Image: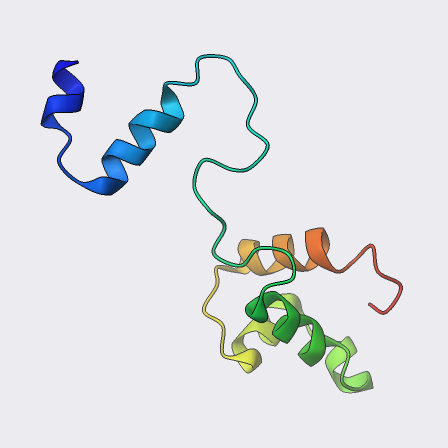
Length: 90
């Protein structure tokens, strides 16, 4: 209880609620994804990646840079693999 009294910001209170689930599994991440599946940013990455043969040879971080999306390299790979690589278009 003392910890909750010290938590003034909304973000900290949200994290406390998420941590108070004990050992239950969550269907969604505790922290919302910045670019969830089907989001504008995710789809923009896909469109840039498949626009022509030259773009198919680029790395996912290069594609993210060209699409104007600021991501860590690992996040670009994660998004492309989770959202689009099971699709036959990539």
